[in-house]
Length: 382
Image 1 (cartoon, helix red, strand yellow):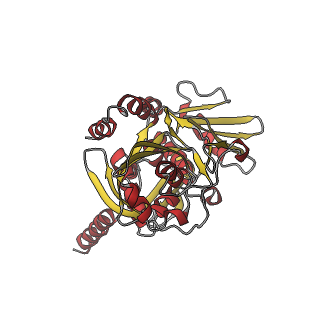
Image 2 (cartoon, one colour):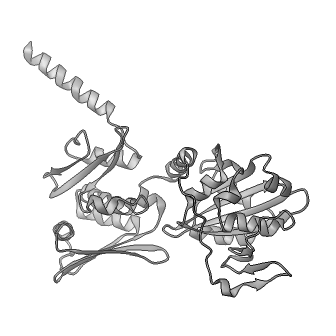
């Protein structure tokens, strides 16, 4: 009888643990199902000798949700920046997922599926030595003497480790879904939640890019600093001086308001956003324009294109090109010139997020003149 009570109690405790443990993403939940043992109940470094002698790491957020799971490769000091932490977490999580495949064929197939390249200089990555070579590489990454560098070209991140004559490298695409471990729907919902809860604490204006000595005179009192162009000449990062915010120059003022964000100019303006997500769903919320621009920060290049500007209507697109990942955000705003300056009501905006690099260029050039660009984007997400 006592033995039965113990067994029942153990079952209840185990079942309760399974129900209580939640994960920030479906991928983390999936990785947990592959783990041969249970996870620690709080943030910790632990070991799982069933598949590797190297230390693992699990992290919980403030609500008790598992937010990260992977090999313990990078120090906490490297992960203090919110921008780069996902890159370090991804690599730790990736190596764990590779080991959890259980055999070399599946592991190599996973790397191919993710378009990830791992290489070392040990000459041991042949058939039958894959996991041994990989574990040696990860052991090298944990050495105190290792030199680590992470760089980015236009589409790819590369991590390189070297200690003495030993080295290895990991090359992976700068794709949000891969690095975050979220699918398109998860990452869009996460962004919407972040925007709704965000409040800016910075007061500085975005610096003007370019040499002010290259100003071109437009008329007796106004000048322009030509910025970069994106896809077409009319979609650009121009700034007009003196930094114009003047109802007599609505188009120039729109360009300055978005290409050169400034908290004071944006004060009193709100965005009423309809965020069009994959699957055809729409997320709606309101945010201060200054908070939205502060959230974007310096992580994006900004380009503004005026599509229509009359006495009664102003329609324009603002494209945000990520400096770190292979995506764009596009904000399409419909308002009136009067509202831009009197600030009587929110600016109506449609937001398309995480548009892949290879999609937006052709879409924008093909559909902008016909007015079908935004309809095409919506159809792609249904």
